[in-house]
Length: 440
Length: 156
Image 1: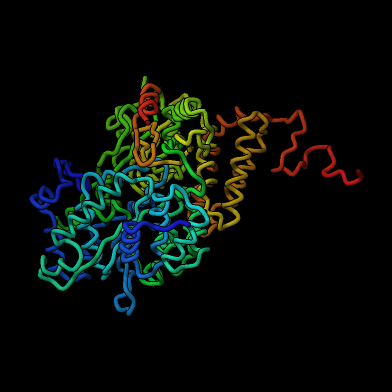
Image 2: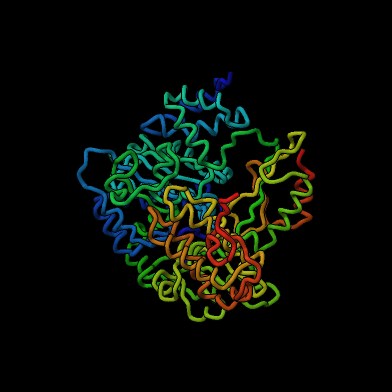
C-alpha cells in the first residue's frame, strides 16, 4: 500500500529530496486550474477532516464566501492535545514540505493570503523543525512574495506558526481562533461559523494538519484515485496512533476501514504476555470506549465505528488489557477534562468536577450503586448543553464506560451505605443527621 | 524594572509582523519574556502591555489561562511527568512517585536550591512512546525506572 501522508522515502524532510519526489508539482498543477475546480476535486475525492468530526474537507472549503471585501484566512490545527493523539508530530518531523504544499494549495482554493499553523506549545522540538522547514520554503521561493516569480503566477501566501501554551481546549476550532487573536482559549458560540466570521471576524477555514497534508496527493493523482483507497464513504489513509497495552505502539499509516482487531493484533503485534483485551478506546480519550469481547468485525472508519457505538475521532487507539482497573482509567480521563474545561459553561465546568469527585468516592470504597446512575445522569446533563464539544468529550467516557462495563463498576460499589457519609453530591438527603444545626 | 533586551525587542517586532493586530502577538511575547525573566511577574506583564500597546488585563488573562506560563520562578530544570491514560497504562505513576521521591518535592514546587521544579502534566502527545517525562523543552520517551534515574542524575 502506498502511503500518502508519511511516504516511505528517506530524508523526505529535506527540501531537495522532496523536490526530486515531485514536490510542489501538485501546486503547479493546481495553479493551472481554477480555485473552484480544486474545491470540486477535493469534494469528489471524499477527503474528510482528520481532526475528529470527519467532515467533508471540500464541502468546508466551499462554505467560504466567493465575494468578500475582507481578507480570508486558513488555520491549520496542529494542537493535538487529545490523549491518544500523537500523529501530527510525525508529519512535522518526516514530511513538513507536503504540509506546506497542502497549505498553499488550500490557500489558493479558498482565496486566503495568510495561513496560521497552530502547534501546541509543548512541541518545542517539532515547532523548531517546522519553523526551519518554513524558512527553507521561503528561501527557495515556495512561500511569500517570491512565489509569484517561482510559479509565474499572481498568487502568493504566507504561512506562520502560532505557538500554543498548554491548553487542550485550543484544539477546538473557535477557541483556536481566539487563541491566535491573543485571547484566552474560550470557544465561541456557533453560528456564525468560521467560514462567515472567523479570525478577526473574517472568513476562515480550519483544517487538521493531516487533512491538509493529504491535499497535494489528491491534486497530483486525481480524486478518483483517492476515493478508491480504503472505506468507500471515508476514503484515504489514516495515521493510526496506537498506545497502551500493545507490543508495538506507535503511529501507522494504513487505509481507512481496516479491522480494529487487525490493527491491534497484527500491526501493533498484540497484547504483552498474550493477555486478553478488556477495553479499547478507538479514537482518542473522548470517544466512547468499546468492550474487548465485542471487537470482532469492527472497522476503522467513521460509519462503521458509529454503528459500533463509538467514533473514529483522531484515530488514536488506546488498548487496555484484562488487568486494567477501569475505575482508575475513568478517573484519570475525567480529571483531564475537569482540568482542561475552560470554565465558560456551567454544565462542563461544574459537571466534570462532580463526576471526578463522585468517582473518587467510589475509589475510596464509599460509593453506592446509586452513584453509578448519578454519574450517568450528570454526564447526560453535560452532553449537548455546552458551547463546544469538550462537554460531550467529558461526558461520553463516563456515560459509556459505566454503561458498557456496568458489571465491573458494580464490583467497586456497595448497595447499601452503612455509615452516613456526608457527601455533597447527595446533599445529605439520605442521612438522618440534620442538614444544619442553627440552634447553637 | 524589567526591560526587554535589544535582541528580544527585535524578536517581538518579528512576532508582531505575523498578525494584523498587536494583541495577537501577546502569546509569543509572553514566551519571550518568560525566557528572559524565568517567570511572569506583575512588572513583566506591564512591560509586555507597554511594548505591544495593549491593556495589561489582556496580558493577565492570557498568562493566567495557559498552563505553560509561570507566574512564579521555576527550577533550572523543570521536570514534567505525564500521567495521562496512555502513560498511566505503561507505568507513569511509578515514574511519578520515583521522580517525586528523588527530587524530594511535590507537584508545582521548586527545590530549595532552585535547581529542580516538578509538574504533573496532561497528555504531552507521546502516547505511543509512553511513559515519558520532559525536562524543560526536551522529551524523554520509552522510559524505565533505570532510564529515569540516569536522566535525573545527568541534570547539572
